[in-house]
Image 1 (tube, rainbow over the protein chains, first blue to last red):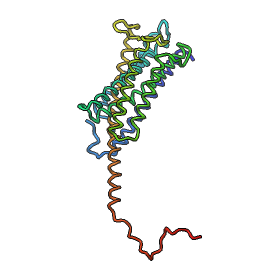
Image 2 (cartoon, rainbow over the protein chains, first blue to last red; image 1 turned 90 degrees about the vertical axis):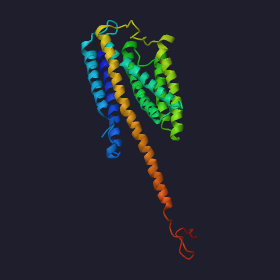
Image 3 (cartoon, rainbow over the protein chains, first blue to last red; image 1 turned 60 degrees about the vertical axis):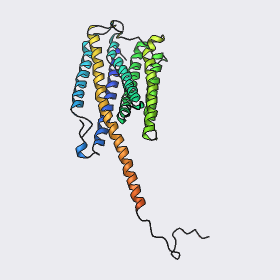
Image 4 (cartoon, chains in turn blue, purple; image 1 turned 45 degrees about the vertical axis):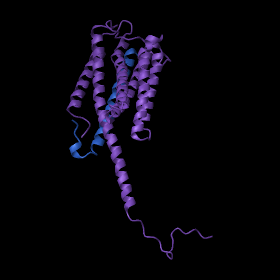
Length: 44
Length: 257
């Protein structure tokens, strides 16, 4: 693999892991927020 | 319907914008290095990711201290510690992954038992252990106290890991951003500093969402337990089945030979 191959691999791994973790956090938050009464669903 | 609000949206947009700027600058605008060639472009990820892992574990330890001290003890400190601890593990794993990807072309190996690498792997394992302790089936107070003590042990490893390249002869290079005399300059230095801002914003955005998620999870856990207890009490209060009379046939008769 060329040097740029390793560079792209490093950037891709970082992007995919952070995007995946962020998405998981958001979806779980969305799912649990639905279980709250409507008046308590906003965050100040 | 989510854990977001105006603050997180602003933070999220800022994180995305700075990350995009770092990607453009790091992958296309900045020049290759005289010694490291194109591999220098990994410097715009790896040091920032590793630093954020340290910061995340530092926040976990600080929040744990605030939880351990009786005067400042509050549930929010334990929840913040848990939120930051999980993000710390993610960033620590990324630090190991990106370091390994850099090490293969630079050193010729994916992994070596160098002091810095070994301590970072230990840190990652301790972070996973911390998350496991947070899920142990114990009363909430006791579990929080136990995990707070583990968080302090993690901080101890963070400090040793930070100074590993100074205290031991390691294959890993020393600090690129040494105080007052950085080893890189110009566009490279600017992009590297911007990468710290970008990953810092990502951490800030993530920790707010993860903290709110911890609050929701605890609430669901507590209310779920309350509902289960209420149902059990209601069940116990209900009148039981009528007693079976002496002459009535029993459904529990022993089998006849």
